[in-house]
Amino acid sequence: MSSSQGSSHLPPNKVTRRGFLIAITGSALAAAAGCRPDGLVVPTVYAPGSGPRPTATPSGTASASALHDPTYGEVTFDKMILTSAEDLYITQYDYDSTPEIDADTWTLKVDGLVENPTTFDLKTLKGFPVYEDMRTLECIGNPVGGGLIGNVLWKGFRFEEILNRVNVKPTATYLKFECADGYSTSVELKWATQPDVMMAYEMNGEPLTTKHGFPIRILMPGLYGQKMPRWITHLEFIDQYYRGFWESRGWSDVASVQTNSIIKGPSSGYETKAGSELVIQGVAWAGTRAITKVEVQIDGGEWMPANLTHGPSPRAWTQWYLKWTPPAPGTYRIAVHATDETGFVQTNEASGIFGDAAPDGTSAIHRITIQAV
Image 1 (cartoon, rainbow, N blue to C red):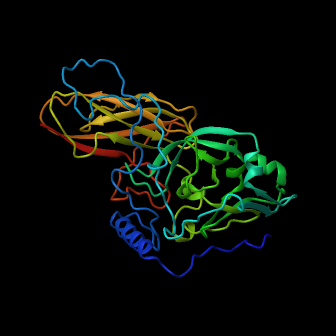
Image 2: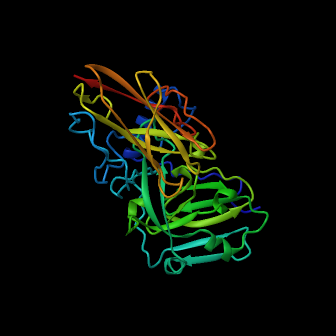
Image 3: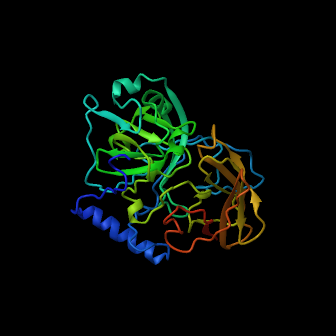
């Protein structure tokens, strides 16, 4: 057995003021939602308006309606949208401990149950064949309709470059991560050895920023961000599960992505004019599973198929839109659900503020209300 087996990382007893406010506020909200297991610490409180903003040029066919809503009357989700570094969400277990790493002295130690323990410097890692991929990153604590999700063009190298050099022993069953900010977690080895795992050093054509993990971070398809830490300094292959920071506080041990869909526009509470065409649009995502259908419902009526724009692979979100005109003044309830390639359809209803995000993420249906005058 490796020396770290059966242990669990615990941060210093000191709780920062900001960390305390985030934890206590999030815990209270989750408890009110009826979705908080005992002892659960909520990683992030959703800030309305956070997350990606449309950057694609509006397009779409001419409308049969003479009127278009001035704010949400144009299709903008028919071309793939990338989330900027500034808009991509941040989740940290200690917001007062963001490492400032010197690229010239930083190293990545890889050991444990391997034939060839190796320490890599950044220059060596950047010398591996380049791999670039568009993929979506989401926080496990993202509530229904939340903004703790983004779509990024990442650049780096395939993790298999490291695996091939260290030669993992057959007795290894888990991979443990240790990071410069004190965070730690682990994943079952199959997540790290699956195709298309990558270590990224650029996002959207620019080096990773400090807050997004400079100089390097790992991305494993199918998992929430909880399991893909930043500022990694040590990878250890071990033969039993290691319970990390968030897992020891009630969050999922696996953290695999659930099928979900989000209405990005219009915003809930929006006021439009009856007879003005409105474009309802957003994103859907299921980790490594392709989204095959997105449907929109108005006031409990028939589910209507939305137009889809797929990314280059299921690892990137699917964007969708539907044109609709409110026929008369009144209040309208709009819902969205997605179907993935396994045939799974979102049917669960959100039960509170955090929409059942704790402790495994959520697949609950996103609903908004708008007003036509």
